[in-house]
Length: 285
Image 1 (cartoon, rainbow, N blue to C red):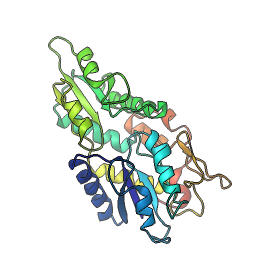
Image 2: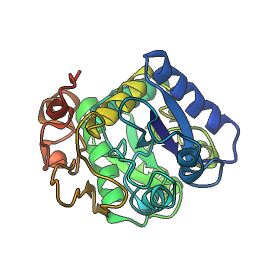
Image 3: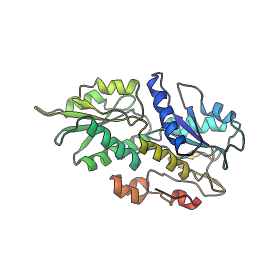
Image 4: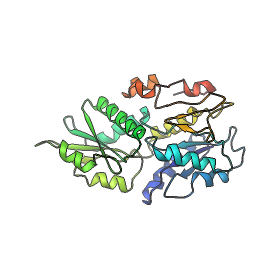
């Protein structure tokens, strides 16, 4: 059972996207239910409390649908798991700047009308967590490598510089500015991007089939069919689950070296790559 865990938003379009994404995953044969880390119900604790202890052949795995491993991923979700009836439920790495998402981002930017020569700004939600901001920077570099142009970064909230400021600073006489939305679903932050004064703004990543691919890969990354693995009780250290005695945890799993070469995400962003799901006999795409 995949417990697909999103941030949550009061905008009804947000949960519609998460439900559509869960449906795509379910259509591929995986059991999946949805939880929210904040704003909306049910939270992770409530969802896990409602599951049978033996849900599925290997029990539930929480998959955080977050583009960076900030406070919600490193603190809120583990606390909600620990407070549940299933406190040893494994949690996968967050989505992060995974190759699948860079592919979707490039598609969205081109669909928004990007032209060669346009200035590009990657717009993210923002975080006070340096790890999370580092993952945004990795996504910007990967997008720049794919488009063949430098990509600046602006934020919708929390972090600086703000998106409107960066759009204004990036604009040149006669030139266009395109904002690449590094958001998963519509909501307040997407509306802020659309009001930032750019010539074009891409849609959020949404329930693209490649995002469903990533959900399933993160499920495998968590080693859901292994005999041991990281749990909420083990604790999250930076970007790595530490499995205590077993030592069989996934560490800083942004992407694999082979996927890195394909997407433009540098291998250094996956410095603790250890083969992931292949340890569990699960085929990697």
